[in-house]
Length: 277
Length: 277
DNA sequence: AAGTGGTCTAGACCACTTC
DNA sequence: AAGTGGTCTAGACCACTTA
Image 1 (cartoon, each protein chain N blue to C red):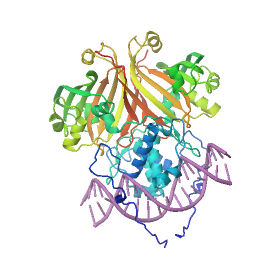
Image 2 (image 1 turned 45 degrees about the vertical axis):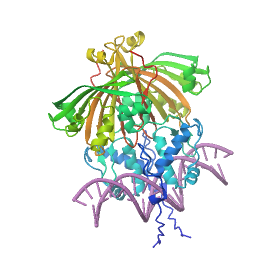
Image 3 (image 1 turned 60 degrees about the vertical axis):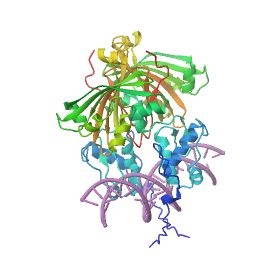
C-alpha cells in the first residue's frame, strides 16, 4: 500500500479573524478571500486593464495556498468577465468594474445603497388572489392556489423608476403581509424574519410600451418605452418564492451582462407570435 | 521521500473517438463530456425538474472519473443555472432549458439556425470613418483612428427584427469589407477567413423609442419601444473587435439571464442624468 | 526550452442534511 | 451515523504561448 502520510492539515483554526465583524457577505473560504483580494487589486488599478495577472504559481506562493485553490479563485473572476484566459498565456485583465452580488441584484434597496443612492418603496396595492395558470406554473403551485399579489412603486432618490408587480407563493405570503407598507428592503426583512434565502433567479428582459396607468405612475408619457424584466426567484432547493413583472422607466437603469466563451448565462429567445407584416 | 509512484495516466489515447467528425463545439475534455451527458439527461427528463442528480461519488464511478472532474462538470451546470446546490443535500434540477453557447449568442445567424429559423442579413450602409471619442474608448484605439461603420438589417423568417449598427476596429475592417453584402453569418465567415475568435462580450441592455428612420426600417410605428443592446466583443486577449448598437423590434426577441448566489454575471447600473421631475 | 494555463487524480477534513 | 457537497492539497501530464 502507498502509505499515505496524512498531514491532516486544512483546519479552520489557522484563520483567526475576529468573529464579531459580521458585515454582509464576508468571505469565508480561502479561495473567496483570494478572489476578493484580486478583485480589489484590479479595482484599484494594481493590475490595470490590458495588463496581466501574476501566474497561478506566483499567486499560490504569495497566498500560501495550493494551485487548485488559486484556480478556484481566479475562475470566479473569469466567470464575472473581469479577466480573460488563454491556455499558455498569462491571464489578462478585461475590466475593472466588479459584478454585483446576486443579493444586490435581487434587492432594489441593497443595490441602491451600494451605489450611494436612496431607495424608496411604496405599496400601491396588496391582495390575496388565486394563481393564474401561468403563475401556478412559474411558482410550482396548484392552479388556483392562493397567492399574494403586490404592486409596488420603487423610487431612487425620490424619483419613481420602477413598477413592480410581484406574485408571492402562498407559503411565504404571511411573512410578506406582515411587512410595513413602506418597507425599504423586502429581501432584507424576509431574510431577517424568516431566514429565507433567495438563491436562484431567472430574468426575461424585453421592452414594452407604457400603458395609461403605468405611464402616470412612472410619470412618463403614455406609450413610452419601458424596460421590462420578468423574473422568478427560487430558494436553493429550487422552490419558487416569487415571480415578478418589473417595468423600469427609460434612462434610469441599464442591465449589463458580461460573458465569455466559457461561461454564458445569457440567452436570446425568439417569441412565437412574431407578427406578420 | 514519499516515493511517488506516478502511474502516468490521463493520456488522451484512452479516448478513441473518430477525428473526422468535427461538428461545431464538440466537447474535448472529460469534464465537458460529462457535463454534456448531464445536460442531455436533464433535457430528456431522465432527471426531472425538482428531482435530484446522482451524488458526485456515483457520477464519478459511472464515468470512471475522479470526483474533481465530476465537480468541474456539474459546476458548469451550476453556472448555467440548470441545477442548484446546497451543502449536505443532493443537487436539485432547476430547469431543462440549456443555455446557449457564447458563439450562438453572439451570432444572430447561428442562433436563428439553432432555433430552426432562417436568418437574413442586409447591409444598408458601410463606410470608413474616424472613431468618435466614446468609440475609440470602447475599441481601445486612438481618437480619430479609422474604423468601419456598418448598418445592417437582420431578418428572421423574412421579418425584420433587428437593426445593427456595428463599428469594427480598423485592424479587422478589411476582412469585414471583403464579405458579401448579404452575408448570412458574419461571425462564421470572419472565423473561417481570418481565424478570429470572439471570446468575451459585454452587453448593456435598455429600452428606447424608435426614431422615424428606424421605425420605417423595422416596420413599426414611430416611438415604439425597442429593446436596445449595446455590446462590445473582444478576443481572448481582451482586444476589442467590434462595438455595436442593436435594436430589436418589440415582441420578437427576449433576453434571458439565469443566475444564482454563486455565479452572477448580471449587473444593474444606474445612469446618472436621471431626469428630475 | 521555459513558462503558463487546462485537465486530472487520490486522498483528506469539514459543514451540513437526512435518516 | 451515514451521506453529500464544499474546501484544500500535492503532484502529474498535456497543449499552448512566448522567447
